Image 1: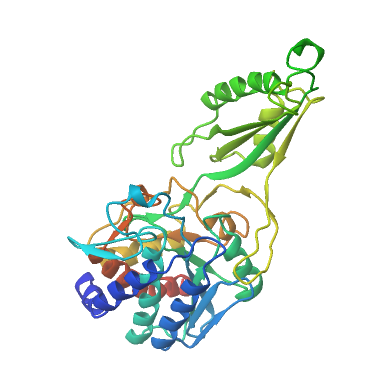
Image 2: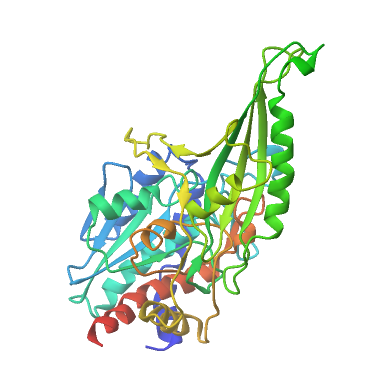
Length: 402
């Protein structure tokens, strides 16, 4: 099937994709509040006559097409970040403005841009009637990714749709095949001191002063973290600092910093913690390192407590799934796709990072537009991505034949 064939077949869904995208944008759905977005996606899947549609206990939407032995997940998260100050936007972020070939609004590039072509692409694959007996497709609208990468997909893969063979995520790649990204973790360092009256600070030990030395060392640590030719450099940044003190006329007895740590190839949780504890200014008697935990309830009320550690992952370029994605993109684009990686983090931290399920990504829109006041996706690219997702299961089915 050449590019003209698959894109022409996807064209029949152009207007439906635009309508569905605009309707999703009009429904606010920040993390833990995705209920109405989930209901709208369920409605669309049922309208398209999916074989089975349900919402699991954690709030993920799951639509199934086919009953074959090769089990494939198309995943896009259905939560968005908030809009921030409305005054920062030149248009209403919850209208779904269409202008100059783009749809604008919160979630247009992160991640309704993935949901829409995956929902329609799976339906188009069924309509094409090729290899339907070889694969089962699960289109997953996962929750809470913006709050805690991978958590919603984790529940789906561990409880709702087990024994998955392959995952393809719809996060923004600008129609490139992505095969990994850096990991990350959220770290607090707490320094303890001894409070006293501010008029005689020598009577105590100022926790802020203790921490200030460590902050300087963390800045220097960032400069010498290891690099990777594909993923880029590991980084650490102090992103928040606070203290506790009995009054503004007293020496603080506790200081806390938050560190945004990005992990490149070869870096993991143990290494990141050890690097902080080995800094010259880290005082084990008066300081401790904490890895944050996430325990916010999903929109269904279910809690899945987890550490905020999200592993680095890379799928080798020669892996059969990457090559299947490449062939599918060639058919949709009419050219060879670029193969690269994300700068930001995705649900792949769980599917590939923890479960080692082969994972790639393909989606319209760019990372640069995500979380911005220019949040947008190109309509033509929604159609191309729909063709990609209609063709991908057929290419994946070839892997098992080999």
